[in-house]
Length: 609
Image (tube, rainbow, N blue to C red):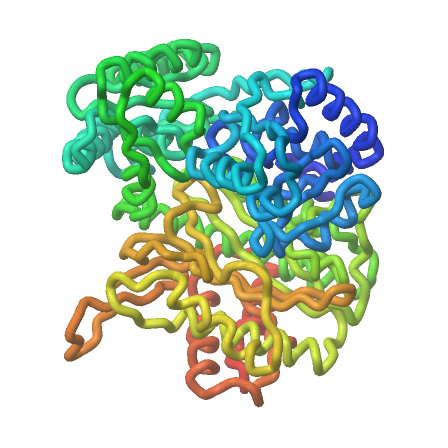
């Protein structure tokens, strides 16, 4: 009845091949005179989702998470993952080959400083690490008495005999009715910012920023409409876009050539060397620009100005058209989610549904809108103990029946041309335990604390992060991921620079869209997460002595009241939840299927009705 077209459930894990691949890599390192090598989960742009041709870390280790790295020495190998993936990594790798380290607590540079043999030549691919990351590695190697050595071409590529070809996804123009501004206006803003920064040129290494600046979208990676490409914008004059011409229709090429010189990627290195030879001051994005780019410019005599790409902030602050688009997208998406939740409540008690069934059903309800372009990430569909794996991805090998008296966590999102969505709901199947209700209510209280937050202009996500954790902390509990991430406009579901986390140092500005997603995870038992997207808006406070901001909740879908313990809720929290559910009913009732309406009415009743 239901079908998933934008995601698959094949078990892509190749753990059983790791031993042979690790041996082949070590042989190649020995041939090159290298005593070790670092394998990041990265491409040349530091993208979250990478093309199959760039999946070197899963090819080597079997680990398929979106963040991590491996270090291979002649006598041992280590894989580094953050807290989201500590459970997943142990299920996917061969622990007789790789030991596991925490990516944040003991990152590769610290580990290398403590473990790299003196005199070693340690290799890295300068196209897969930023200049800052390369400097950290270099310092760590020096502290260990070793040497960091560029390795080109990447030694894994020499051993990867069946490496896929690079992608050639079609590039399309992102219409102004969705973008709000013309590309000409955006490029003028960028050039003004380059002048303010006293630079001669900006190299755009982040394809998200290329897509935003030129009002284009692509299809080179899964789930995010990216055109893999680079660009160069001078302070004055005509920009250049470096993109494989096979991705461009005649119409798209004509559009782009009104904005820039359209050049093949092979010309990029020589053009950077020419900038260097002209003694230009070139701005490089410290977050995404490869160390190789810095080397090409600096070795030719240019001056590097490393820092944030100014486009990143421009892109994060949505204009009025993008805000109107995300409002429309979230109402449309909310109706699809409500239809799914109503269907799930009808079907799940029989115990016949599986995690894959749920993913396929939700994607189908979204496709039925007629406007779905893609899912914004592979849906996380976790029943019972699988819900405790923060970034769990169901496969046919792990697919689990959704059983009575368990919790079910579904985290999913959609890509529409007018907006990107991301929502998590945790629902009860059967009767939840008192502990489940306690933990869910504490997570909900943290979610509401973020949703109701009022804060001065200039406050960062790090300053708000503890709001979401306070009620868990008071019970000796916590969660090992950030509370929220930025979200793009028909771009990445994980967008910088702002986030709500301990590491969120970027000020929150009006027009930014972020997620609000505290959680709790009991390993081997269940997971809980409640996620809505929020928009930073002006807070109108009488007598305020400085500009104040607040969050407007964008997501519309019921929160499962069966999992709430009202005795733990304050009157203000109950009032927020009741008001939210009233808005959900108002927005969605005209759009949902007839058989969903009675369910939606019941799911949005006041908590103490």
